[in-house]
Image (cartoon, rainbow, N blue to C red; front, side, top):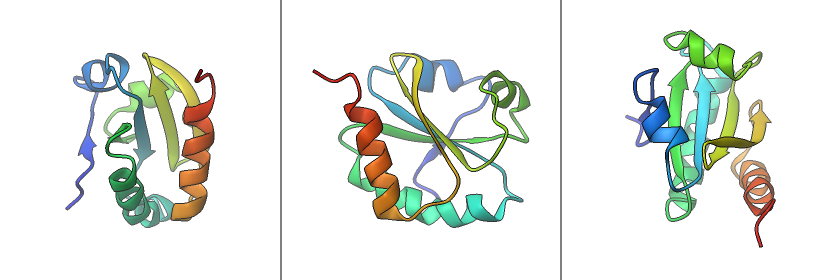
Length: 112
């Protein structure tokens, strides 16, 4: 069982866009092999960043409108939101250290 909560078309706005902390959304599908491989990696990274940001999952098959709004063409696709805006996008599978480095680079952009 995943410790990362799911969002859908009813909860996306409040959970992601209106969040006061950054949110990483994992756009995925249950039939996607790389998405399933990324799951355990994302769990570890979420635990590492629990004090700095939230992690959420969005099933693109069940929430096509949001996937279309954000032009999701490949999955897994991770989008980091801050203040309701996309601040970074990571596409494809990667290991824990590589993913953490990418997240760190995105979060540090625009910070004073």
